[in-house]
Length: 257
Image (cartoon, rainbow, N blue to C red):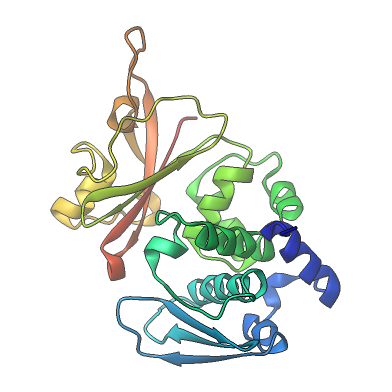
């Protein structure tokens, strides 16, 4: 029977006696599993994996600016190596696979593995306890786990102590959304449509506006991203955006206090 990705990640941490992934070099884990890692100027992707006869080659795009992003790419590729070792295959990973909106069983499994490996559920939940949600909390968690802001936000959606919603857009079009289970607002059918005109994301696409940290949180209306029912009242909500110029993409994070 196939082992769940999160279980595989926890078994690896236990097997190697790793108690602090934030300081662990992911390249070492790939080498330990008969792989090699190199950097090269890749076009249109962040990482590439080739597996054959029990060995693997992982290539990371040398243009990736942030080390935390590289760590997530490596963790994702390690997930492929451990979970899909029965296949002689190649994987090419970009924002569509790494950030979750291109859904497929193998890509989801690799992302689930990477999330648990880098941000173990028990430690992540404990790190959120009794803390108010804010962009500063996401930054604090990202620093603690040595992860990217984007991967930290997605982990918070699943395990955080405050309901939030995320909308990932690229080239002004909404590609993917995800929300906490206890956020019960309805989301309209907006995939592949333009971001809402009154959203903070739209300000980036129209005016190239990226708010500085002190102004990162912008007030919006509930109706900006959510569908109002017949008897619903509009309400104050908040949006902050993680912008990735490399992909012309915006991750909008929405919540109410």
